[in-house]
Length: 124
Image (cartoon, rainbow, N blue to C red; front, side, top):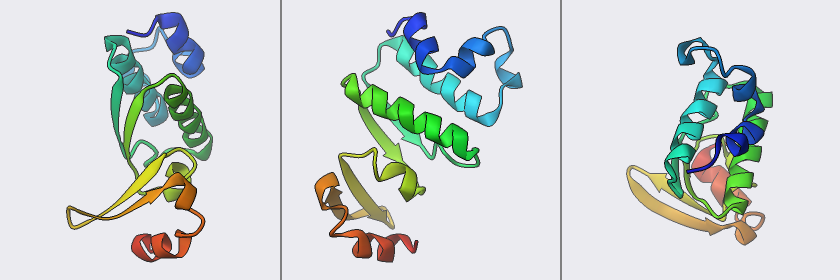
């Protein structure tokens, strides 16, 4: 798995709180701790479900940086996310799921031209 130094570099908040019990952490810090635990196991695939929900914009931005840095390290990330503004710059491809079915697949390169279609699906 990923070394502690590398994890603390990625999540400086966790380094600052390393002596706090997990239950004392904020929502954003708990999200980071959950990701850090997975990275320690050596997993190369992360399933991230609504990780930005209810979090402050500054924490959301930090999580975006972490996802970007993990992608660059060769991790595969499946992100379930209603916050399209967060997901748009991060993903290689977007799957729009409606009633359990994939109704649209949009590559990163097609985002601009399919923006209207996506807005229709997402009601943004």
